[in-house]
Length: 614
Image 1 (cartoon, rainbow, N blue to C red):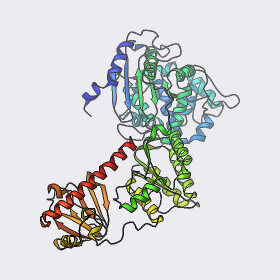
Image 2: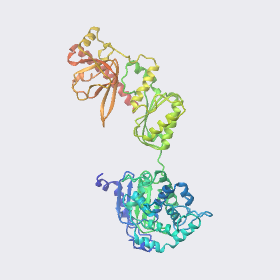
Image 3: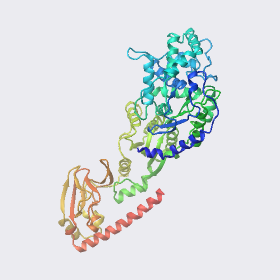
Image 4: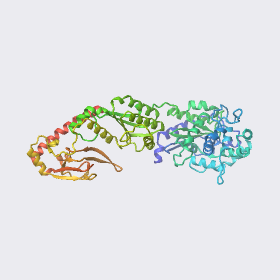
């Protein structure tokens, strides 16, 4: 996308505005317990946002480097989970909020296990769990992990590292306590040195936003496509960030801001709105709890102004995803029917129900849809759920819809899901359930039809067959059955037949294409043809299917212009091709009058359908 589009976007303008406003906020002080951090300019302020689509917005000092400090704990915790697995990490580090400062010695009585990985004690224990390989020592693996998150090679600020190492006596004491409790299996000096180095990694506000975006995007870097963290551990990292990431301010943070976050005494904050974006803020002025004053205020404003609180209630009901519901008493498939078939559908079509869904299906909306369908099931025998406008399904909604399909099959009814080629996980689950279930299975299966129209046509055919109507015969040789020939004498019908030419088209053969010169019409004696148009990308949209006793190409009889659609033989089809020039004037007038009457009736039916849809 053109960078100018981002420059003038509402998000960029908003970030520009709050950046300007926050420059006047002068509360707090730069961290001084690590001497080298005092060199930071208190006026610095950078804000960056990276969406899960990979769009990057930034303002101010967003490209200025500073040391990551305690924000590194979230990344290292994820790496430890990958290296050691959840159970082993939990045996060394807990997940309970300590309610104490970042450098507190919060160890579980008896076991010596740190309360969580976001305080120094827990982070030192976590760092001690990072695996070492012959070609990649622990520090290199940590740098490589950070590089997957940020999308660039990472470096350590050696000056800050030495400053931390020279003054980090409390952290050394914590490491020796952990060794005494059996939490560490390496020497305290080695582990603490790794910890000092990881805290001294240089980042920018943009890097922090990228880290947040990876977590928001289920562990995948939205710009590079590289997996930064295995998806099964993302929720674990975000959970600990939510409850412990802002130290003894964590409760107030989740109450006011409502986004998983991690702060560092270097002045950085990374925040995450799962499924949407990562946010990075850098400003060195800290409050008494060690969090960036301007960073907290920026996140508060974003959360409030855009209703981004994680626990903001977004309604997920059938009303949000149910686009349209209708039966087939008046709105039928594109299969053209004769009078007897239409009469059956007018009387029995209510037994076919079509549900058009839209948007993203989550547990609440899928469950609500299922309840609504089941509450109406008594009067329905055939159900079609059109998923053409559904953009995604989560695991819960997939399970709910799978259970719905099974329930309906046990009732002896038919349910079809259509237009769901893009919903891979849903299709895989449904196919797996169908193969492994011991419950009664419907035939054809619930994924048999690609689109709703063909599914509805099949359902209509079942109703028509059940009514034992003569319906569409296998062969209709009598031209008198054609609406265009209504009121003609036997002699006139014979004249028309003699004027035409009998043609046979094999299944799949094209009869004519859109744009061809229109010089004749075709009366179907046997077989079936499909009228369609090209909808782009190699796909075609069915307009109608016609069978014996029906005619196609007759619209051009009025103007003899070019064809507006394609017609192909669906199965082997026999037709009488009647050229317009071979029809004498008297028969032409009769046929045009029949056509006018036919289309007048069609307009009336279509008007009723529009009223129904309205």
